[in-house]
Image (cartoon, rainbow, N blue to C red; front, side, top):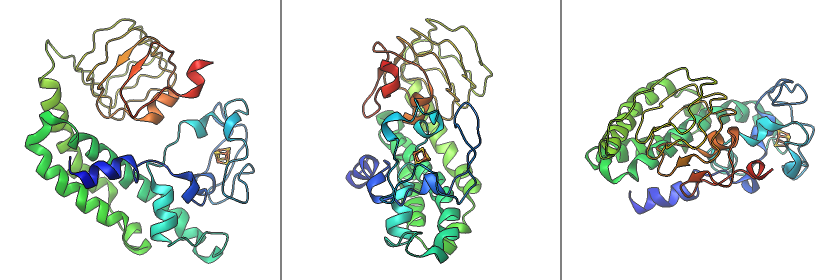
Length: 275
Ligand code: SF4
């Protein structure tokens, strides 16, 4: 990975709430459910958002029933839209720009997510044959994220995803091919609630798999491809996810785990795993 992209992956592709106008807490809607205790419409500030754009209950989100907030990641879209697209002028200072800001935010979030996956693929040594194309894709998407609100609102994110996904898939295949043994293919599989305790899934493809409430405790998930897997309430206690491909912090935040669960840096155990 180039130094520039490596640096961006550690900074620009991580949420920096201190430089964001609380966009996820205003722009996005949520409904009363197991994830939120109240309804909130898109474009309406959450009642817990403070004047300084910080969350007033940040340390108690789960206790207060706001589980949904703990599994959300903007991948750095919040600070980019606040500081780059709208040049540091908030929706409170310029209410006329608020609606556009709220519309641009989810677009940039999807682009930042694509950048994050691309940066992760560039970190895979075995994926070197596709690194040149990945770098090209990264530069193009990165430039788009810095464009005007009008351009951003016209971006065809699905088409971009269609261009990048084959590269990510190839990067995954090249990397998993180096893993010894037969690799299982559970791509897109419905494994909701399945008992997979201790499963040997090293180097497996679990791309887009439904793993909701699946029991993957003590499973070997080293170098498994987990891109887009739905891991809500997945039991990862004692599982080994070292080197898992395209695994994100929101996926871990949505799952259950314990002190024995192994993940690779910069991923970390969510605070609620200790409870
Ligand atoms: S509870 Fe906090 S983090 Fe969640 S939307 Fe409201 S202000 Fe944002």
